[in-house]
Every structure is written in structure tokens, then in C-alpha cells.
Length: 130
Image (cartoon, rainbow, N blue to C red; front, side):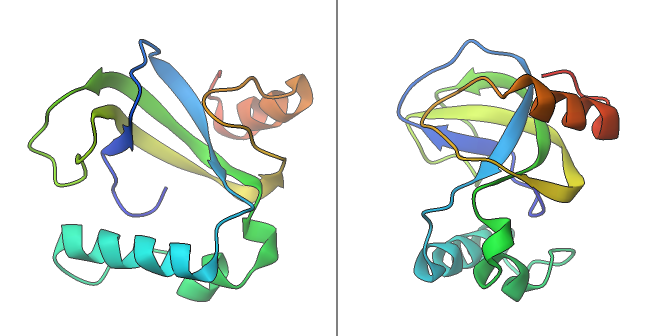
């Protein structure tokens, strides 16, 4: 949501195109999040700017198990010059739009349908139909 990520790496393809909600896992550890920050900083070649304070997403329980916002999924590729691409498949992402207040919800693996009330909250705030 905040680091300029252009690709989400997966080991499975998708034909989906459109807005998707971004969910922060409730099961990630402090080490997982620190590793993510290290990866982001190495890809960008510098300390990331414009990110929420590191403590916001490493030590705040409320930022885990939530919808953070939306991105537009523009395609799925098997190769790219982007430093963000290093998987078998890369979902091409653009237009990240964070929510003002993350929405708590349990996640699932893969793509899943949001409950109607949660989707409506996102539509009202961001205007993004999911």
C-alpha cells in the first residue's frame, strides 16, 4: 500500500482484472514484517519514505487482520523488468488507495469475496467497486 509495489508474486496465475482489497495477515510476525521492510528498502535502493512509522505495522495489533485499502490489478505476467517481480507469476498492481481506518476482518487464502457490508464501506470511502 505504501512502498510503490508494482507486482504481487504468486505461484499461481489469475485472469482477474479490477480493484482488489489488500488484506494484512493476522499471522505475520515481527520478523516477517522486518524482512518485508528490508526487502522493500533493498528494491528501492534507499530507505522508504512516505511509509507509516515502522511501529504502526510491526507493533500495532490493530493493523493485523485488516483490509488496508485497494489496488487495481492490471494483469498477470510471467516476466517483468520490475525489481518487485521475482515469482513465477506477478499480479500487476497500480493505484494503491489506503483506507483512512483499516477494517478488521479475518482473511482467507487466494481471492475471496468480502462480506457485502465491508465492500460497501470501501465503496463509500474510496469509490472502488470490488
